[in-house]
Length: 294
Image (cartoon, rainbow, N blue to C red; front, top):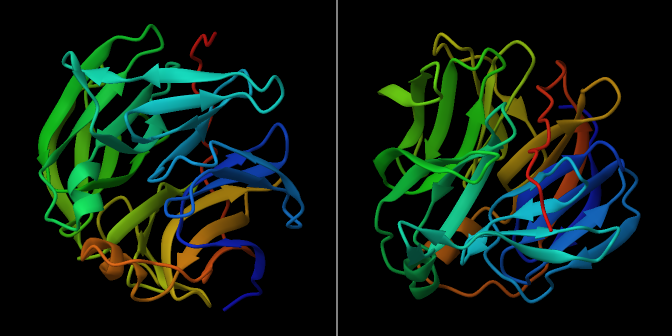
């Protein structure tokens, strides 16, 4: 196990994005609320959306705005101008229950997965979610249905493989067509606590678990590599950063935190942490989306 440093804390840290232009790490706290920013040394750079809970996904837009998911859809906030708004509020003409993770589609738009925040808040079994694509021109394309609880998603550098965590089942893999549709769905990894996800430059898949204090690592052929151990209780999300791509940031939660939320329990202690460490391999850089925002 390498050296790890705690650079932030909260009640239940979840969404995570590396802002390469500003050298800032943005993270969400799904219980305390808000999006918070820190530099790699842990220096705070401020917060926004302080009263918005259940933000599961955070990523960057090319204009420097921070995109964030959650109840009601996808919001954007520009930390420089202070402006904010909604990128997406409706699907099929209906208000959005919840959106969890996002991933750039390589053409300026994003992939995203829906989730049943209404039932999460009630501590009841979630209804299945879906996978969608939002193009840079704001066209919506439904890609898959029947995802038990969509979570971490990734799109490989060749634009041919798409991965999605179905939290209580495992990691799903899809082939990607020329027009960015998904086909040939298959179970890539069986895992009952599949949460966040990242890719390294070799195409290996790093998968976190809300009951696991390590990253499960799989090569593209579906062969399991050596686990990457951490000092965390359990891990919700990870992202790569740094000049060489080998800095690794991940959110940890108490070992029983995910099950507490699943069962509708309350989390009141600030025992969730954002760690910084080093990876043996560089990570795949996540490029910003390119939406025109008001």
